Length: 441
Image (cartoon, rainbow, N blue to C red; front, side):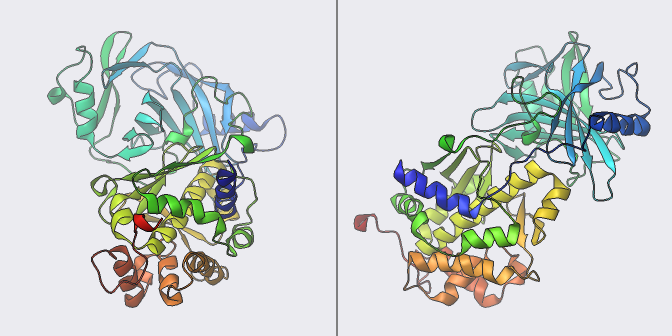
């Protein structure tokens, strides 16, 4: 328990955040203002039962809302038809699984999206479909998730539907890009991406796992999720079979540096962490991506940091230290964006830039090199590496600290070469970091 608390202290120092679900505005008329804006944009009234969901009847329930920061509001949608979605051998009733998501941009303009959740499991993160339909242009998005991780494949969606309980048609007869369900017992399309429009990948109004609140979890006007108590928080070590990585995880609290103070100075953070659990696990390279060292995702309140088994087996231990710190930072920033909303996130983290990484198919968070905090922050990560191994070359420690907080294209050839050498330390004699030797533990 003492070791767990020390690890928590270190991670909290790195990934401190405020889990604030703030009101839209002050006063009792906040939801009325949002409702008026929605009706102004769409011409909606309660008689228009097919506006939100064209293939089945529904209506907005403005009395049940969840605030995810000042710029994102989730509103319950009540279904007036029985809609059963067959998927993965299950039949999911969509009764409590439809919301209206409202997002406000930097120009203070609101946009609205119908989001349909078809969860097959919530164990280890959200699994199942999330269907998003922006009301502005109807450019729908269909996403299948496995434990919080997106799988971008219409073929996967179609196969899952074809393998249901015998009610459905053959998957080969279904139109690609469409999803289907039984509306009052009759098979009908639920969503279909118009071929001429395609999909937009970067719309902040699209639904995501962090928007799903099952019945009894949050909700109600001004509701939302509450932060778990400190006693409930835990760092979960799921790195069995990798004793050197487990030792590093245990040593993290003792790798003292200026990271704690720098987080406060750079991000104006707090010492309270909204995570309930933070799990470290190992995953095969063919799953996470051959070039991906690690990633952070899964349930927003209990994120999992997945470390590439190749890195754990072949990289220097100094490289593993840097990877653990980098991924903890990404987990914190992702949690903060989901909790605060895009605009509030940018206000709280002015030195952070979002960057889409094609190798890992995810958004990374980078430190702006022009920001005054950039140098001290990278040096703090470097110092943590040197505290792990004081004999390690400081120049190489700095290069390892860079990878993961800046783009590869902004690094020098020498810095990239150092990272490649330490990543492939087991087979690259030019690397100088520590190799894992379980016999010395």
